[in-house]
Image (cartoon, rainbow, N blue to C red):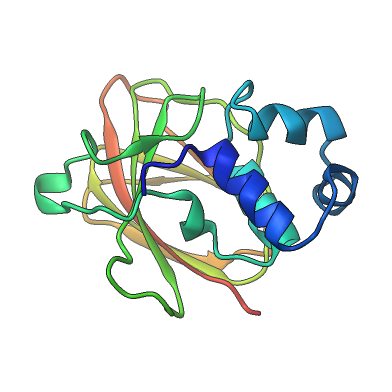
Length: 178
């Protein structure tokens, strides 16, 4: 699937017969921001994609490339850069179409420490493959080293950061209650 994220958002919104205003109201974004996302004039973060997926009643995986090559934690070629915060996400659900949870391979560049904590329905499981990941969970900072994990209810305020000068690669598995 080579369609840019903005076009995917617009197509899904139109399939659901929703206006920009309705999407903006459901997400809390401004109409102009949603329009800029659709036109590729603004970058989407995981937080904004999560809110959009809930507003559009779709899985967040729909915003990711369908192609996958998961060997050696590779987050290059087939990965789509979704954020100006220098975070790379790769969906690992392929080829399953109707799945109960969303596995993502996430790559945080050194010093990636921007982004706002958010909440959503469901649960998340994080497993660090490389580096040291800082997880903000209900205003508490938790450091996870290689091969350490954490699982939590996603209705708790949370986000992930890389405060180191090394790349961090981790697996994020989310399950959303529908």
